[in-house]
Length: 313
Image 1: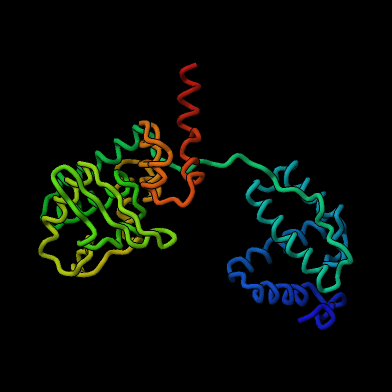
Image 2 (image 1 turned 60 degrees about the vertical axis):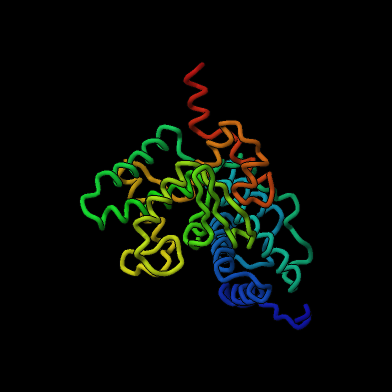
């Protein structure tokens, strides 16, 4: 649809031009979630505009002054978090370009409306004390299992967790493992990940603790069918879901008195490896990152690192 064919809705209500804006967003290939997020940010800007200008908002009313003052309201008044403002900034920039294309605006007023820079937050990992406490709870569950049923689950949990905490695997990679993908020897072992993030194949070496956890689990799993490494209690021939992994990790974390996710375990693996001197390029390859820059986030000090430094002063 060219510019002349588009309808200029200056005299219609907010919902009408918003519907056209939303339709154009969808036509550009944006997901419905993104469309709704953009519309919410536009509604919030429109509400601010009407409060501060005392006139009804419509796209042709937007000026660079309005946009810069809205940024000042967000940043200086701390009315939005940096991430929230930066997201809204993208939505408003998109609105302004659209308004110019369809004839609401003669120019793009978005010049000089800057992002709000913030220091990138490093991935969340468990500090050494919490990491030890969590793994100790995993062992307590194995040793304290009162029935074969609970021991079966505890050994499965330990093997899943060690692949994430001791080999850096994602929960999706853990549930996708097939029996033929795991090679275990007395002094070495590896797991073959056929479709990691970005559909990349890689091989992950398995340390002694991870191998022991897998050997113990596979021994009790031997009576189950299917070719998945990890199977469910009720459906012993079917792969478990990532949701189940998340629930089991969260439950063990709760037992240990902390909130833990599978991502925390993978991040803890990366942080521990780097803190113990593993080269960044090696850790990047173990994690299956496309770029070393992604892995470099783990080099940045976390809150515990900062706290520890302050305590030593």
